[in-house]
Length: 445
Ligand code: ADP
Ligand code: MG
Image 1 (cartoon, rainbow, N blue to C red):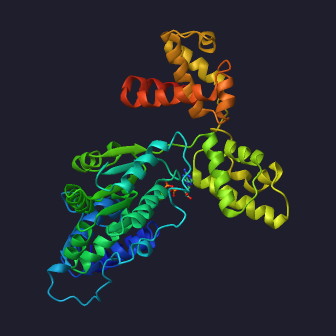
Image 2: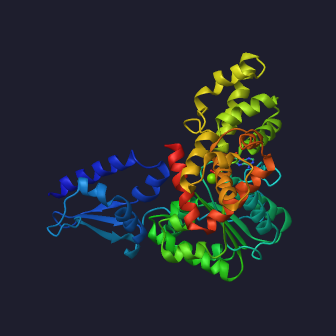
């Protein structure tokens, strides 16, 4: 291929990529790459650092193959020149990485309402909240690192900010830094470009508390993973507190074994989907903050229909409030349906009933369905009944009181007790975990 065609092919590749990544990503990674006149049939690129080369090959090799020639041995016909090896660079120096100023509260960029008092507790997040509070109160002295994981919109960032707020207020002398993984990587890249990576490393290693959000973005970014791992180890070894959030537990992250092991050094805490009562409490709390009058009946109605993401609950509330102001109407069920209808999920995609759960659990444990509904308390019956209660709390969107009644008039607290017991046990007992997964699949199928 002629050099001109190669240039054309590279520019087509850039057009292709530009549509597929964020503006920042493009600016950071692709804009600094230059084409160099080089060997025939081979594209020679000048990259600002080895990181850019590896980033390109790690993430885009497949796409590159669609645009560029390959060598007879099947490898991509690209060679790289690292710009750092050149003596002169004409590029203006980008800004230095962000530093925490003397007033951490302002420079940390924290959301003022993501605090502990504004975090509503329920059985699914009580444990993680108390772990977060304990770390905030005694940084470096309780769990280190604290690893918080859970699905989207369940309050991971909220808790991370809450720890930072608390620490800023109560430990004034400590150097605290909150950063998203994305920003951590971007800072590292610009410090490399700046040749200020020593300064960058010194900054991170001098922290007393590092809070890092969404660590899953470190996956498939080998070089950054390594740098992060060094920082991480350096901090932990000096008993400096590290708190990490992620959308998955450490073992499910595509990171090196070493990194995963480090994440598991301290406490791994899961933040679950809030149950019905907690969802109602969150709605009422947020409504109060926003000065919205939310009748309990409406809060129940919303909580029954939006159940797996707190951010959506909040979004629903905002829209509802805007809608009712605009139309000058009181908030009623009709107003709710009209304003947030499309946000509402039909519970769990389809309605799961306690009957279906009992039927499946009875089959799985080879007991009679009628025994599960009865008052019998032998272990052979009581245990599957608790599993059924656990599943009911997880899968049925009604209030606990209502669910408990369907178990032959049990109380709300019996149900909660069963749920706690089984969730704890399933964490330790793989067989039980698999049984529950199996039952769940059947019930939801
Ligand atoms: P994540 O980081 O897990 O995706 P966020 O922390 O951004 O979720 O939370 C999404 C929204 O839900 C935020 O506005 C947060 O305040 C709110 N939220 C989540 N859990 C709770 C809770 N238990 N109490 C009060 N607000 C919550
Ligand atoms: Mg978040």
